Amino acid sequence: MEYVTAVPHPRTEAAASARAGRRSLALALLCGALGAAVALLATRQQWSEGTATVAGGAFPLTAKGSDVTGVPAALAIVGLAALVAVFAVRRAGRLVVAGLLALCGAGTIAAALSGASDSSALDQKAAQASGDTSATVDALTHTAWPYAAAVGGALILLAGLLALRYGRLWPAMSGRYERGGAPRARRTAASADPDRPEDLWKALDRGEDPTGTGPA
Image 1: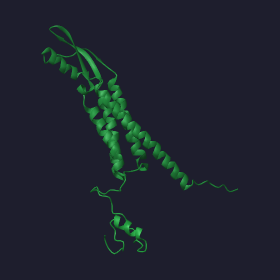
Image 2: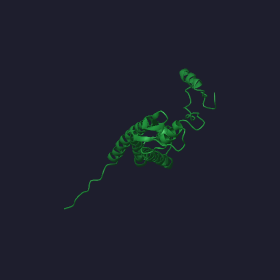
Image 3: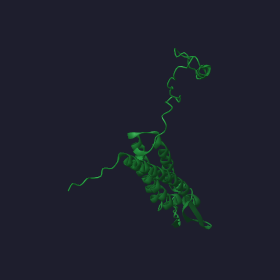
Image 4: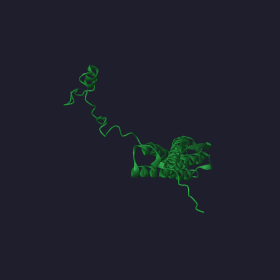
């Protein structure tokens, strides 16, 4: 008895690839935009607090994420730009930009986790408040915002990995306009019928020669 192996229909494979491309595109856009927004928001929040010893007693100090490190915010902005740039390039260029997007996410995670235990920003503020350059912060505590920034970086990283895996299936920006910004020349329309006056007027309005012998 002979067994016949079912061969996938090309149209079925093309439809499946199209669906995968649409889903991955929507997920990448959501993750990239949300991740950048979370990372930027987190860097504006309070990451740590403590006290400095001054003549009048304990002086409260706080530090925002931007005081601790500016890397997560900078990489989030670069990642957001890379997410948009993915659609402006093709083939190898798209892989390069997708790789940059993934690196921005990984860098955001590393910088945020590094800043979660950093005390240098508050040490500097303690030295300024006390007038003693060797002073350090006391009763140091940290908030959860550095980890929120790391979550934002993870979302950006996921967007980059999706772009690396499925970017070839995503659409690119329209090539209607050339580099100079001018639209490409349209194909010359067929010559107007001299027996139909309305065709002659339409041809003249388009800047064409109704006789088909040269420009109007």
